Length: 326
Image 1 (tube, rainbow, N blue to C red):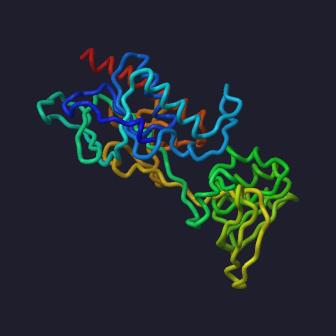
Image 2 (cartoon, one colour):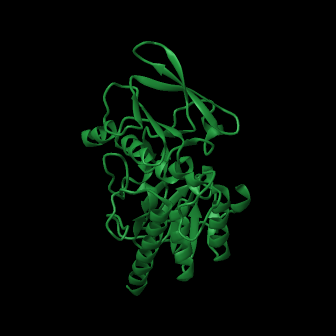
Image 3 (cartoon, rainbow, N blue to C red):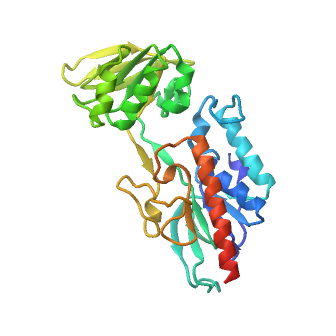
């Protein structure tokens, strides 16, 4: 993906907007802003597309029958680049409001520090996404998208009438298992403790599903498979014994981590570290917006990320119009 990046303009240039993150939300914002004639710089620390790059196949995005995560990411980049958005592979480490720096003395200008250099913009869209917590097993990365998934809503349909396992004990794991129970012929729910942390109503619903089986006091220790996942090895914490479970899919639902710590001074964060926004994706700081998985929301899908990106961009344009009219 390095072929996409290039060094941004001189540090004294003030962009209309800087976007932090080149996933679906960030790229959508860039597309809308460029179509509105605004100058845009996107910072991305890893790869265009975000987590979706690791998806073997996408079939739940309107208008696209089927596409790989890699091809989808390429299309995102090509669209934004063709419209003139700049993209740089740099990690953002700080965000602040800078009233005066390097001859820039207009109040309200944002200063973004990325890889030790400073950049300036009239507005900022935070679309930093999140990271799914992983099991940390040696085979996990190789089998990601080949049976190992972190999103049941995204990938569950690929395993219709097959066997699936879910690992986790919170609401996400319980909801994933409930969703999969209507798709898969058999669903195993694996949790390291004897009781679940999630809501009791979800536990009760699952307990009445004939194709759902709880495997408690257990942890996944090993993944097996070549071209795709075929089995998992489980350790029972009570008995100290190992067992093998044949499964076509493993959905890991042990938590998500947003990367919002360096923005906390300018935005409100909830208890889980997600950015608190209003309906227009605006934060408590004027001119600062958040879009996509990094913000507090109920559903995290490609379509909701795209919607956030568009909403945030419209908000940025309205903000810039007000700013330029002052």
